[in-house]
Picture 1 (cartoon, rainbow, N blue to C red):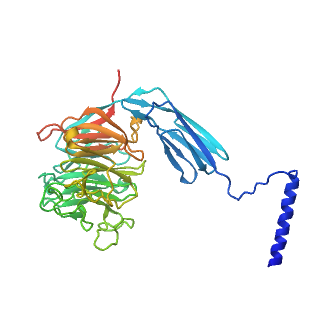
Picture 2: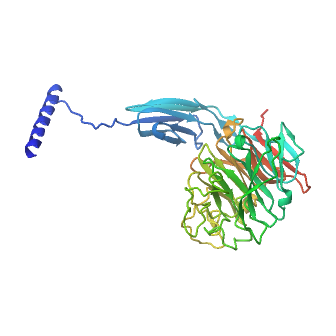
Picture 3: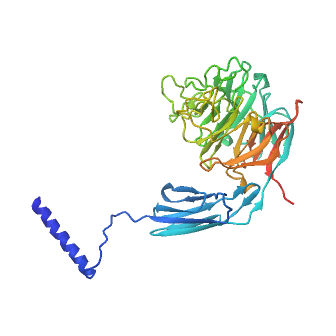
Amino acid sequence: MPRARAGLRHIALLLIAFVLAACGGGGQVSITSGTPPAGALAVVITGLPSGVGADVTVNGPAGFRQRLGSSATLPGLASGTYTVAAASVLSGSAAFFPQPVTQQVTVGNGTASATVTYGTPQPFALALQEVASGLAEPVFLTAPANDARLFIVERAGRIRVMQGGTLLTTPFLDISSLTTTDGERGLLSMAFDPAFAANGRFYVYYTDRSGNITIARYQVSASNPNAANTAATIVLAIPHPNFSNHNGGLLAFGPDGMLYLGTGDGGGAGDPAGNAQNLNALLGKLLRIDVNGGQPYAIPAGNPFAGQPGRRGEIWASGLRNPWRFAFDNTGGTLYIADVGQAQREEIDVAAAATGGQNYGWNRTEGSACFGSTTCDMQGITQPQLDYGHDATGGCAIVGGYVYRGSAMPPLRGRYLYSDLCSGWLRSFDFRDAAAEQIDWGITIPGSVLSFGTDASGEIYVLADTSTSSASGKVYRIIQRKTP
């Protein structure tokens, strides 16, 4: 072996001498590995006032994705084609539109470049357009995919259909005999199966006459698309004794096809039963179940506590007081939970939709503050991305909305809209990896704000009860205000 190494060394020296001779004896030899050198992309963003962030996303090979708020050079990029996509930006009542909206750049050796220019700002404001009235406490609105109808949930136990601008007289479903409006109880939401067009299934979230949280599956009538069969399959029943408040109230399918449920802590002040922090209780949680994987449901293998003794496998996140409304933004891959506070703070939690196991703090914390004391153990608690106090805003209970992904108002895309039961203002923020661009739209929603909803096109609606009469509920569509 020593002799073989000497031979190889001799050959190597001869090769080096040959290369040096080819370079005139004084040249430099560059020895590189088989990995091609990385390139860079300089993205130049112009036209925005100081303090206003851009919204530019760079996508490239091998799943590369980087969102930029200002000019930057992205180093160490693999060779290939990169797409630079720019979105409009809001600043107060002004919208800045980019040019070009989309461009492709080839990155190889060295530094490639792309320029995005935001033009002259244009006025942008929101308004409310009434689309339905005469409803009894409308608490939710939704629609199946690719369906022009609106389905409006009334708390007393009815689901109404709005078709072609007309509110149909006969309910789609009436389960008023199964529920009660005592306290905060009632029929609270519904969700269409992602395959509703093929299987006709939908799910409802209500409290039964004993107060138990009940998830039931129904089927649309084969002969009438505006009516449902009355037979139901109970998927899950969660005991909710002692108190009529803090029932949570929303069920929704996530981007993974699983059914998510937001449950309240069981009611009473301060979570007297300690449910929110108890991983062996289903109250005060966000739950995740697979309604297509077993009967009546299966626990998804990816749930954080699946198979762990003394912990319920259905739990996706804990530490919630009363998550009346939550929402998935499939485009951004995020989950927003609006958790109603007790007497001090209201909060919005934001997390990656694919990541579970968060503890949002209740009843150790209320919003970003310690609950019941000036100090508390914050270890393991996921802090809210945004919270607000009752004193400064006149608020009393947050009403979570949705991230706008419609086509009618491009400057609003990517912004999460929300309100408050008592104050009636309309606000939004753009998450962008942190709560940014917080805007108060200067709108007071008439009456008590009960919920938000979306149609099949991604347009957003807000539901409110405008008086104490039995049919004073209204639905408003959020639209762009026309300027003179």
